[in-house]
Length: 260
Image 1 (cartoon, one colour):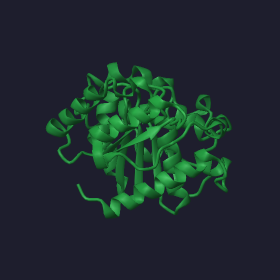
Image 2 (image 1 turned 90 degrees about the vertical axis):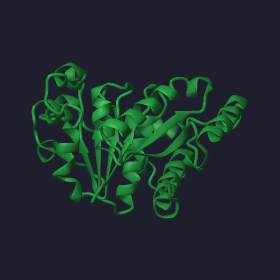
Image 3 (image 1 turned 180 degrees about the horizontal axis):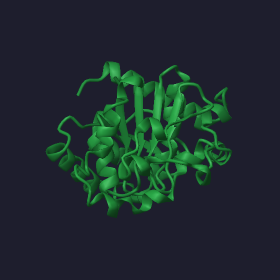
């Protein structure tokens, strides 16, 4: 039975997609059968895995709006054990279309219930908003990971995100847990990064992952070549590859060793 994890932060540009995509790829490289669901209409995770969005026949939009099955929309990646439900600009209109559907908050959950026993992990890359698409992701998930950029505005809007998670817990998914918080785009040379890190640590305590993700050009290069960092830098020589490999290992360790 798959563990379903949503990656969410309503602020854009915090490394959410990069984190979701690369952790999913490392899990696959560790032998875990992993499904990545791109639920952002920008489709950055889709592009980052080398899929040309203009060639898509079906996407997550078809699952949510047109009642397509997960199997109909799923793509098998070149990296063994990694599968993708892609996204494209069609999803941008889904928020309005979903309003008129029955069980509109639970459409993704119902679709995943059919296939979740076929995977070890299902990772969901949420859009940078708190609308119905994100609500679907949180309702379907067992837990949520929040990537936070270690810069001045990092904590802005975090209260709203936590309130949204609590509302989903109360009304739609009482089993939803906060898996953890990941510091991204970290620069040890910047005093503000250290100060923000301390504030986040104070707020989240043990929920903050020990591994932080640094700013690293190789992560950008990998995405531009349509590859996760584990394929672009398979020997993990770059700081980005080392960070995401270690972060994924910490994720697995926490599952076994840390209790809520």
